[in-house]
Picture 1 (cartoon, rainbow, N blue to C red):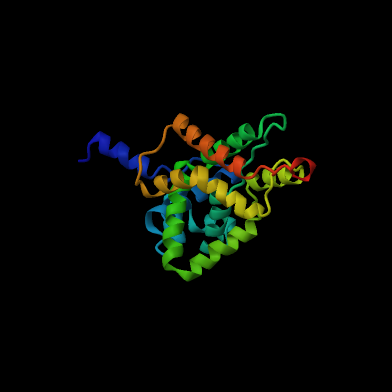
Picture 2 (picture 1 turned 90 degrees about the vertical axis):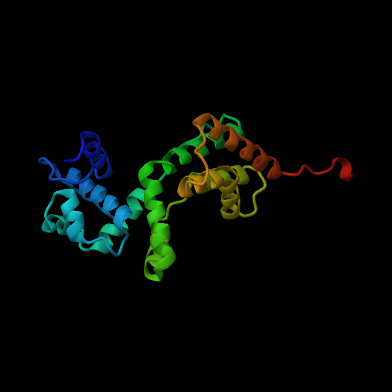
Length: 226
């Protein structure tokens, strides 16, 4: 007979599984996505079936098909809504550029470093590295999402106002991400480094932001042509 602690541990591993109480349509849809996320993370895309998702969600397969036409449609919805979900943050224009960027990056970090998103990202990386069809599907979904990180919008505003010199917004946003969240994200995904505390992460991001801003400030023209 399993101990109480092992039983509780098992419950934590599969929080979405089991027959649900009466739920409204939005709750049922969300529970199906929870179950799909859990099964995908545990077993991978090809080993995941609508039967296993139905079992985990505690619903019939017929109910699943009422919400999603196929496993692929369910997978697409899961990736778009849970992995490529928009990050909403509006900086205060009167704050310094450093403070605005730190608020943006902190908001992105809080969204990215949730357990489900990290686990989904690991699973998707695994699937795309070994299956060209899934790789193409994820690439198509990324384009379809039309999601522009708030960093890019912010950089466009600063560049057009002449406060920063940024010839290529996409390249610059990738550079900023690498200087602030690239290392911490890789550490979280691979468990190769202990996670930084909130304070240490903010210090690290603030350092990268200062270096980034210094490298993109407009060069003032020389006085009197000298």
